[in-house]
Image 1 (cartoon, rainbow, N blue to C red):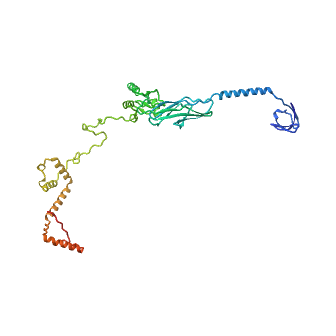
Image 2: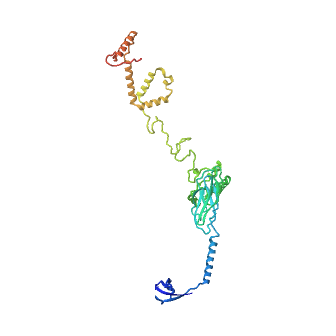
Image 3: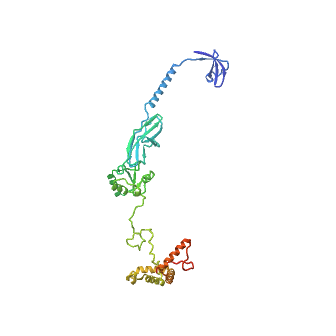
Length: 404
């Protein structure tokens, strides 16, 4: 079909063409002849190109088929979860590499007993995880949930029960530097208790056994916070028939020695003495003199005082004490009295003065029956008046009956 159009406004990019019925058509200027101007008439032949239509249709169908074959037939697979190892307080889980097909990964989460425990970091490269802090002899259920741009996929549920304290099958040991004899004994003990030894430090390694703190595997065990213990720990677990704590069996822990160890520089210590190194020596006896000092001299007044006390005691003391059987007690008393010095002498003088006053005190006259009646009447009269009478001394001093 041939169409005649009149050129209207000519622009650098678009030219306005007018139809016979006065319609405006914007036409690209690059498709028009270069010498046209406003008012020029151009003829445009319009026809349908069926060959080109068929070719475009074929290209579009091929593109649709390739999209369906790539994105429509394959889809992400659910994760396959399983238990790798279990101990008394931890569980190691592993799963197959994730199959995403053509979808993009959003997240991979771990669920414990139906509740989300957390997201797995780097799920495309990590295929194991360790859950610690579990209860002993308790059942747990785990499963994974994979979220992608093609949908959400959940793994099967795995039920794991933590071991009892007497179940040693979950112990996984990696050995470090050990003497050949110790290594052979350790392998035999591990086999007897039902544990296993693996090569290299892995995520399921529970203990690192060595006698020397060096090496690449020892450094890796420290980075992963795996307990580094001595071979004695395995022997202790076998003897007790249960898993034991590792605090006393750490490689850098102090080993308990004999209770009383003889050390150089302790000459002069009595045999059988229970004094340990660093303990404070027992103080010397109270009355023993200090080294380099002479015993204090005995004072004569103390001896006189002791003799006076014997005189006052009368015959209460036995003949053996008078003759000096217990010499040690007398010497201790004399030394204590010698230390007191002038204080004992002053006390002796005071005692003598009190005795003289007691002896020189006049004896109170006895009261006859008649005088007793008079004194009773006087006391009753004083009670009636509300006033007390003075003592017979007349000077206001009071006397008490003293039995001599």
